[in-house]
Length: 111
Length: 114
Image (cartoon, rainbow over all chains, first blue to last red; front, side):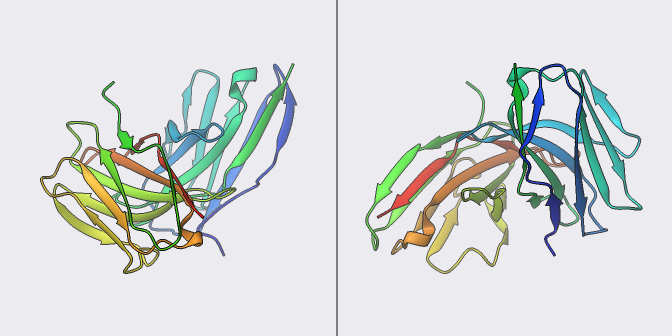
């Protein structure tokens, strides 16, 4: 079983739609959780950290369920510029050194 | 630009040759990481430095790979006797100590071994 599992997609949605991505992780000792965004042939960019209480940043909302080892990302009012691959990321050990990435979920937003 | 920088951005080499990549982290970051990413996969951890000390290495880092961070600032990753399976994007990231460990990535070096 992979340490971080994501649906690879692609998710094809029209502009303005709401889309949700899910992710599960296997290491119950993980302490930090993130969503990164990666455009084609570019580096991953930190989108947001994920907190136990859930957190929101504009159109983006992240949720964490430690009991189920489940992380989600909700994007409201999708824009064309949201088209990218979204990577679910957890730290793989204590001390926050090693990040473990999912394979990513590809999002395509169309006009 | 005060982000992470990497050089070169692209490298094409013949099998058996040695290659070296450089990473300059964000200036106040004392932690530096190397990852490798192949097509359709997320980045995979290779190694981690805190200041000049290499504190963790992945099993992916065979004895043909060596990384250094001699003065706790920039880092180099060398691959000796390259193989076609080494073709990948090599990503460097840096972070501050403490906090949640957010890592910020450089643009990567894309290696093609022919």
